[in-house]
Length: 299
Ligand SMILES: [Zn+2]
Image 1 (cartoon, rainbow, N blue to C red):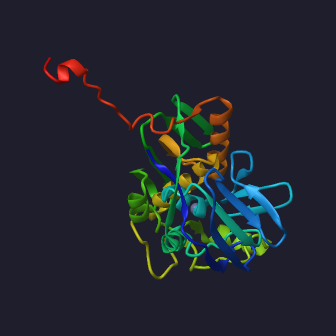
Image 2 (image 1 turned 30 degrees about the vertical axis):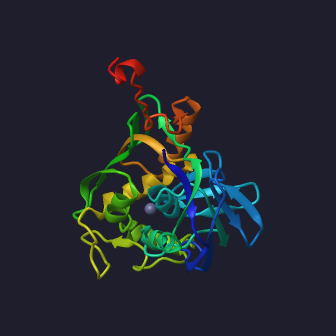
């Protein structure tokens, strides 16, 4: 049986918001079992819990939207929390978005590891995929399949000499998540980034917080962290968006050219079609072997 966990002590961190260009302060705090992930906008004093009704997949980001406010760009923190098996956490944020850091989830991972873990002796609540289910929207597709663990398979296809078709598959557990996924940065194309900057949608953003591509290659001096960093980041985003369920997922996901909007739409479709059920705690792992009394003593 797995128990719910949170972090052992509060940690504070600040970084640039890619949309606002402002410095954003965040405090991660331990939370009680059963709470889940809760955002508190400290600047406007409003609370927004993470669940399938509050999370929205937007173009290029995922947000949690309450009645009195929102927090944008939550997907990389959610990814770290899903990957590291953090069930309960309070996220205090002074602003409308989370910092982008280097465009991956490694800063969040480091911060959580620095805080350490606390277990509460309450079984983890998990959601299992009951039956195969497909969700298609335009060019993108997600396919869900029942499985005994959480596995993600992703395929992306960009007409660019450095990307093309890339595929990556991984069974998600904390060790594999940190080693193979957490470092992968988000990426964007220079022309569309410049357009968004001109429109004032992106006030932050630089070569420090994303891989930036032109027609031929990348503009970042340090190069790629892995040849297939692009598809690894897609897996990072999927792990994060799936945590919008408010509980860890047990099942296998196949993604073809998917994006944030598709991920969250697909989760809602799963939910409304009754394709999810709670895994009974301890049901699979605990076995009793009963030896008939008489035979055990050779009678
Ligand atoms: Zn991302």
